[in-house]
Length: 524
Image (cartoon, rainbow, N blue to C red; front, side):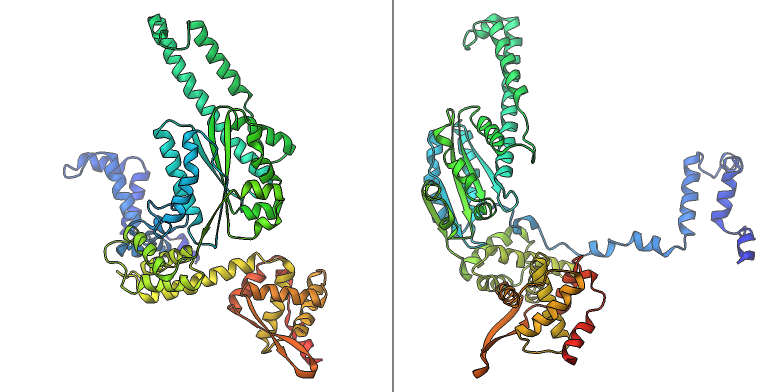
């Protein structure tokens, strides 16, 4: 080691020669100037040095980093526009939803006449086109309102994310404050232009409502004063009545019809009660300039059962139900999207029918069908094949199912995770037809290990039933004759992947070695 590090580099190494010549500040420059066959200029010499240095590099990571994406880019892309297969995309045409769209349009057209539309409640299972249809109609409504110069606006709120009265009102207030500020800026720009013209020729004021330049100046000052009073609502910290007052003032700043679209409205009611809906549905009796209509979208057909009767009667003035798609309808939807999403003949004949069949089993979920098709395309690209095949769809089905399981397990409450972990430990140790008592014994040991509260066996049985409803376990009640009945439990999800998700939880990750607990249970 010592000899190699102290010995100078061989003179024949071109990179060493060039570097040393350049380093002394004279030799490299002198050669370039005196040799008539050599290009002059230091930049050429630098290029030679850099090239030689690169050529002499033996670091394998350099080669790996240079070729990291090369192989992946060699294959031709299958997708033309992948975004049309995502749930966030709103298509220009929604097959098999014409009836529901026409119903919405018939109700909302009154907004274009300056009147208040009836409130609408839209029901349907996940993936039945509720949100896409509502957004489509809303975009058409706003486009038509601009065409006829009617002040009409639609504001969308996702109540799964914005799930409290404070957040809903704050988000709406800030949206209208921003719009009002933009309106004032545009109006001031017009007035300043008029002001400039009137200074050159006072005749510019003749066909306006202003009799003099002083009146124009006064209007500009009034608008600027209005804008200075706008105050953005913080996401926390204000009393709710102050937030509501800010929202009310912002909406009523000028004449307009507003449609507030509350997606996943049942989540808002579940988290915060019906106060928000009560306040919004009663606004019109107090507003002077504007009118407000509510469009609620829900997966739960029974959520109105928990509403105050006054809210229920005012909110559910019109109801529209979106039935699940059947397999043929899903094929039409996928065909329409795939024509835009994929290049040429990228899909084999059986891909779309198979995606539709899988999704039809999931209660006619178009979102699931689109996810399947997109994921199958991504898998085909990774395989660097020219076509999406039936096998890619089947792989996509397995991948999506696993992703769903991972997400469901990750978001389980801690107690449910402990119960599920106990079932996994029993299965891993060869126990079949697991009963509730066996799960409870392991569950208690796990709770003691991580210092968690121990629930009663009855409550643990309820948690097992909840896991059964989620499709994570299969719990079947079997009769033992005179010994009564018991639940036989088995996992319905991949063991290793589920266990990895559970152990990623910080509390369950603290368990050092659970094997003795299981073994002790059977030794006794």
